[in-house]
Length: 94
Image (tube, rainbow, N blue to C red; front, top):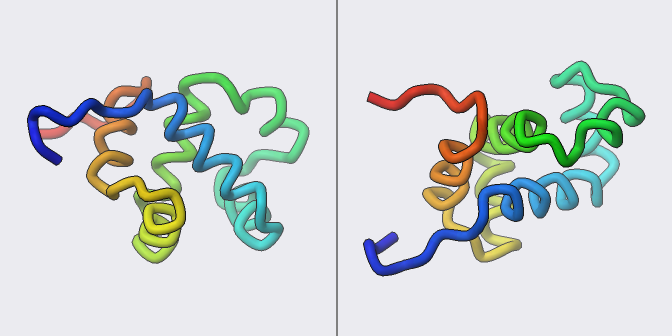
């Protein structure tokens, strides 16, 4: 990522990731199980910045999933990581 590139909106990246997770039952069930969310809970909180951050945390925590999303959507993993930093609840980087 160069300094001249504009970064996508982090909410948009996270919503794309959520839609991608939801498009595959196995991916979605794993996300729900690990996050403790129910389908109803996910629908109720899906657009909240904290929930969107959790979606990106989930992607970033498992490299095969991250790379699959990255390749399918043409979004570099670094952009996903940067998007996560711009949403509430992101861990502080040193």
